[in-house]
Image (tube, rainbow, N blue to C red; front, side, top):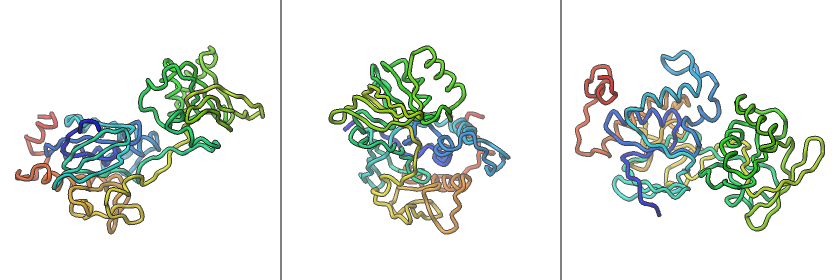
Length: 342
């Protein structure tokens, strides 16, 4: 077990609600780390609709998911939160009153006084491609996320997909891998045009391969892949040597390990007290789309409100002997100093 990272609050989820919670906690001198299963900050806004307009953020007539994420990151800069991406919380163990030991699927361990679940509809889980027997190679040669780029050095790597994730990793891993073969079901890509241009230039210069079709079979011993069969749209069958594969077939939302944390659940949502947004477990809070209460609206602005009230209760766990006086950022010189505007 790795040495525990100690922090006041650990937030599960780095979407808009988790990010704004950093701001509210920061005003109260509470230190925060955030864990997210995605490889980027922004939650659903970043993953599902980065360019989609959002029209119901108070005071902002229109902003994209990416734009909102960037603005929130700018807002919380003074508080220097630490992000741990590409990781999923697996276990939560009570070690104090309050106090929790939290472990991720990457083996990272946190010790915190407060846990805030801001996980949207749950964790994004990769969709498994419809390739017979692929399960046998998962964790060995087939990976749904890149944790360490070095793992792909000198590999015959097959990347399957046509979106931003697939193209980004083609370009990022190309200098490391022995050879990259990109497989997509059609010669039309959903990724950023510049990324597609760069990929096509590598193909044209013979530095990588592009196959239009679908992976239909895998070969190998144990969990070590040796080859994949690709059936082209024109009916041709090609066997490609590969000892590593990255399939990007999109994501699906699942509650995931949250179900095992001892929290009460209603229809895969976490009931909370509407005065504090605390769950049935003292010291664990839930904000944003993952919680439920009478009159709940699944809106980003609702999650912001929930984060503000959560912080007022969470600070009492972090500083039990400190008298907390509510202040306004517009008039408090001490808050403005924290924000670097005074």
